Amino acid sequence: MNDEGAEVRRAEGGMAMPRSLLERARQLLDAGPGGFEIVEPRSAATVALLRSTGQTFELLLQRRPATMVFAPRMHVFPGGVVEDGDHDQARWLQQDHAEVAADAHLACCDDLDDCFGLDVLPARVAAVRETAEETGYQIGDPRSLDYIAHWVTPEVEPRRYDTRFYATVIGAVGPPPAVNGESDAAHWIRPGEALRMHLAGEMAMLPPTAVVVRQFAEYAEAGLSAHESVVRAGAARVRPLLPVPRNEPSSPEGILWVMVDARTREQIDLVGGS
Image (cartoon, rainbow, N blue to C red; front, side, top):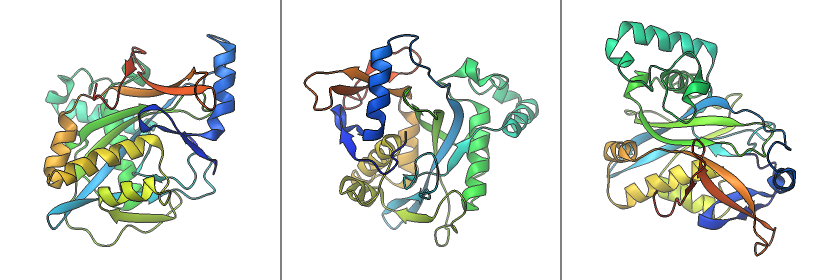
């Protein structure tokens, strides 16, 4: 999803969608099945890093530079696309650790298209690599990450990603990592404060990031520690979420965004927790 500095509209369930998607959404709806060129999503991975602070915890959020083509000025977790080397590393892990091969999802390395919407080892490897490249933090064994969410970029976007979200707790660290080509600012911030700033328009986030931040804000409000929050998030059912536009005459823009399972196209009620 891409903001491009445009006004953001709120849809059902609190979903915020950029105005820049409206025209492409109309084109998709008008064209019907097969009449709109839909770009295949690239596999990607991102990691919510948590650190304990006193009786609560903080999340690391980075701000993407305004010059970025995708998601400029958005606050995101570290991450990026799955590369060929990540597949090679995943295969090595499979050969070196027999227990990995017993997991059908993690063992699916050769063709990520066959594992669309599922947790896969190459994505975990990419998550660890990207975190090290973007933050300098070494987060260890890819298999130790908790798989907490999965989002697929809307079909109306010209750049699309099939993104697995992971989470982990890191030990004592110093100031936020130095900025680099992927970010122009970085913040360790309590999830409740990040959510407040986002809702106030002070910290722009794409909907997937905002949903994960809200999830951890709820855990923090309930008094859960960083480790307890990651375990709770990892225990929840993960479905690949895909925002889809539908015609809705009663909506101010004539379009309503609904959430579906990207694999089954079944509509999902995020508020209801399904």
